[in-house]
Length: 301
Image (cartoon, rainbow, N blue to C red; front, side, top):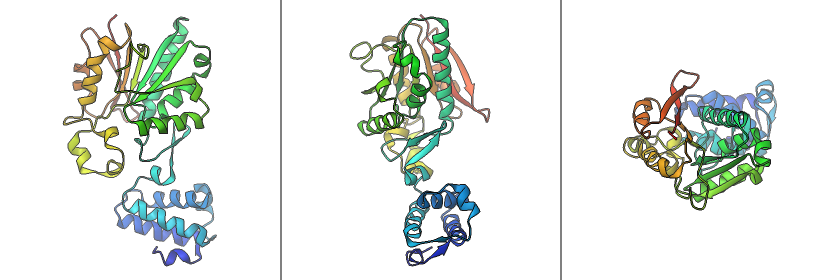
């Protein structure tokens, strides 16, 4: 669909057909789905309505924004940035180029953190600190806060969400506020666990989805990597630079017998496990595809 065509009255069906063709020509692997999602977004309808109303007419108030959205998608921009949100863990997370787009696999990290907190709450009444390092959009911290609201409100759990990017931290604060849990989470501008034991308490549970993509892969700018902030994806020459720094900090910065939950990339289990401090116990949590996705490291007391 060209800009001129966008000024005409079109049907939903014809707009979808032309949009799909355009995105297919741009090498989108999900061209039809992308077109449906974008049309539903600009029409302020759900995708089911779009699929059920192929004969409905689209005025210029929808056709023109649809053309603009198609142009952005054809250039490679992620759907989540075009729409301004990502549906993740049954939540609507605001997304823009200030932070990494939450991935489906990161839901496993959130679930592992929620389960770890629940287990600690069940074992004893002693208060403890949970710290999400590199919170990005704040998606994981938001999910934790919503699930454990009561424990956060009564002080049994303290939840910290930090990031080394002021822009990302601003977006995280917006997501926490949008879900009405901003008062339950302490946000901090911090490089990994730098303030722990000083301005902020030592964490009993560390949760982190640190950048683990190798620099060369980031340079290739495939898919969303060409749009997401480099600080959120670049893990150095082998993808493990930030993870090494975090592990080096753990003995001095984390509480005794702390638990660390990390998202890792495919094939990184052995290398990351080898970075664990002496005496630590390492367990892996696979994703639904059977790939190693979350590592649980229990530090020695």
